[in-house]
Length: 103
Image (cartoon, rainbow, N blue to C red; front, side, top):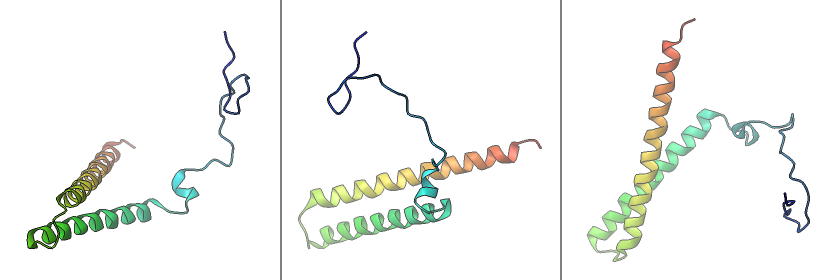
C-alpha cells in the first residue's frame, strides 16, 4: 500500500485527529450563548428583508434599473428566512421531544 503524501510535500503515515481536553463547543469558544447567537441571526434576517424591500421599492419608483441586484437581494432574504424557519421547526420538534420524555 503506498504511503499518503502529506501537505508539506513529504510522505508519511496519516495520524487520526484526536480532540484535546481544551476542545469546547463553537458557541463557547466565540463567547456567545445560544440566545445571543439566535438573536443576532434574527436581526440579520430582518436586515436582509428590509434591504430587499427597499430594493424593490427603489425599482418600482424607477430610482434604479439594476434588476439583477434587486433579484439577488430578494433571493438572499428569502433563503435566510427559509433557513430561520427550519431552525424554528427543529427547535419546536426538540421541545416536543423533551415534553414527551418520561421521567
